[in-house]
Structures are given as C-alpha cells and as structure tokens.
Length: 133
Image (cartoon, rainbow, N blue to C red; front, side):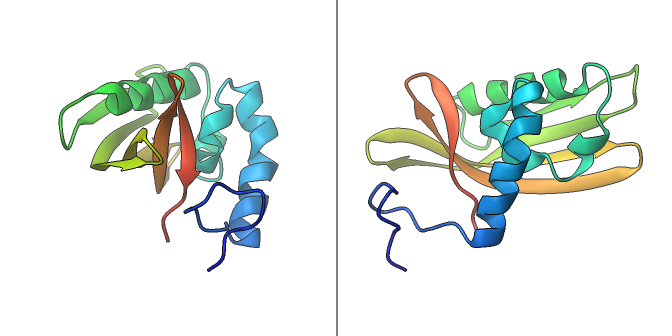
C-alpha cells in the first residue's frame, strides 16, 4: 500500500474506519489527559470511573518505559473494581525512534477488551505509530 502524502515514509495508511475511530475518540481522550492513547477508548475504557483512566495510563507509561524485553505490568482500582494489564510484545526501531508493540487489556463494569498498538518514543512522549492488523 502506498503511504498517504502526509504520512511519514514507511507507515501504511490507516483504514478509514480506524482513522475515524482514532479521531472520534481524541476529544474524549484529551478530556481524560490521554490524547495519545485514543485507540483504547472504544472498549472497557468507556466505563472507567474515578481514577481508572489515570491508573491505566500510569501503568501503560511504566510498561513502555521498562527496558526489559517482555515487560508486563498490571493495575487495579479497588474503589471501582476496574483493572488491566499492559505488556510489551516486541521492541523495534522505526526511523531512528525507540518503539514497542504493546498489548493493553482492561476490565470495567463487566466489559473486557484488548487493544494492540505500535508506539514510539517521540521526544520523551510515547505516541501511536500504527494499529497492527
């Protein structure tokens, strides 16, 4: 697939549905302080209450920052019962950036979901590179 003109070389164009999903959830994620993690907003995250989103984001950031191969960390909010886990599936480099494929699972109010994303460290901030098929 040929990259769209506005995309960095070597990245595949997101499907229209994934792009719509990412854009439509950006506002919700921004309100929660998680604009770069919008790919998570269509599952259990919709049912987060209290500090759930902050705990999940702290856990994901800690997992991404862990230099160990296969790093995995879990979180739990005893006040709401929500919980989840983030794990690094692989480490790689893309255009000179340090990247990880990460799998995030969350549970809230009886809803379970799993999302996978390739994320790269851009000037100290982890950003979504792509959502693997």
